[in-house]
Image (cartoon, rainbow, N blue to C red; front, side):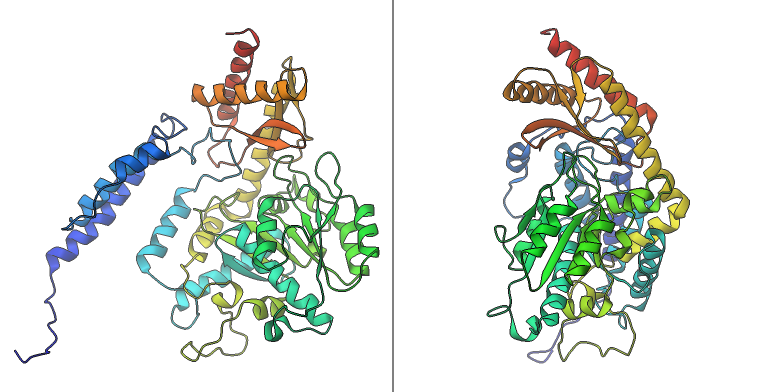
Length: 483
């Protein structure tokens, strides 16, 4: 063989079959985990440090067959898994990653399509465009809007606010894409006092910072006061962005969108909505009234893993003004495919040039549930939340602190001063977690510490809700009795 010749290994059918067997093993372990959800503890059996110590081994000198690797992975990580996809998981606003969405997500990985551009991967790009149209129809948002399929609501807010920043600055004679932000007119950002921290993350990434926002007072449920917004906006001039909220993370409350949009329009401002989970209320006839006027806004961010029950790593940046969206995100390089007029380019709507086919699980879940299935699930969860709140409110010494308008319930236990109430509520939360009947967590609400119940797993039904409330009441009674 001549020096420098390239050696091409012959096809090894055995090695290829052995590699494919890893896929079968992954399915076996995944199915076993899902079957165990009804009986397994909600909390991981080992904590982070225990898991780290168990997993921290030297890098292997020699590799293993694929199926052995998957077996080892499943056995090693399983003690550190939380039962997040279970019917009794009420700890955070997380959907239960429906098996249909998971299966589609597996195909996204197995097909290995970098779905940044439409011409190299027409199948996955077309699916994403169809899913975009279906979502706008389901949510009854302006059909001319564009949707960037992002990693989640945090990045979705970042994308929407980037589009807002560009549009507002160009309207005031400054092109941030060409000239950056040094010397640009200041952009005034107005945000409710009870806004979620993920929105602040997006503002930070865009250079707005935490302290430069104008905080608008909110009522006891976290709803922005329109009259306070009007006063703050009247005191300023120049580029402006208003950030409203669809579903406050603790109370589930909705800002008064018609009034906010009317005030913002008078100042030429862009209105963005953090709708991570609350925007899904628009898909259900029982709850759509809560979102009245939201279609008047300019952009909306939301998560797919919440009420659409997809696996994690998918959110939606929805922007009414498609060109402002595209200008904020498009990447130019000589090696990238040419774009024909009117074609939808997936990567022109998100900040990534290498990206998985996120449209596949979205399309699959919309196809699986249909309009009726999404509406049924949202309505059922909201009814369960009201049912749980009613049962808890009937118990002496237990107070529900929010108007249960959606799927969120915040509860406080005990009497006495604030510190005593906090201590008592924390003790009930810990006891419920120890009972393994369900999983709930705590949260700050105003100056109070509360138990927050989030009803959003597609598996949650009346039996799961009653089992959870039974455990909460039993733990509270034991604690009150000194047991």
